[in-house]
Length: 77
Image (spheres, rainbow, N blue to C red):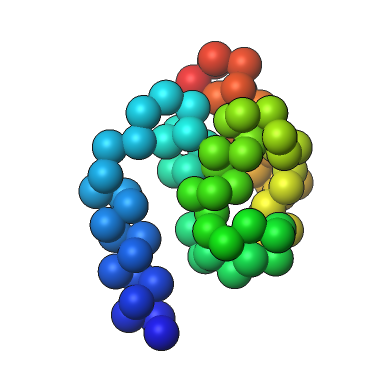
């Protein structure tokens, strides 16, 4: 299972993700644990970038990552 997750994450990181989605995804832990209600960290990054989710939505590290994500959303990064 870990092999599949690492292969999945590697393929995503090698894919060019443009704009805020890519920057937010780079900040997230990429565990794809589903604790936030999304199937993957990429899905959650898209939801945050689209304004459908809060910047602290990551259950694993939300409060720690929120300021970084807020800077991305504000265009400071």
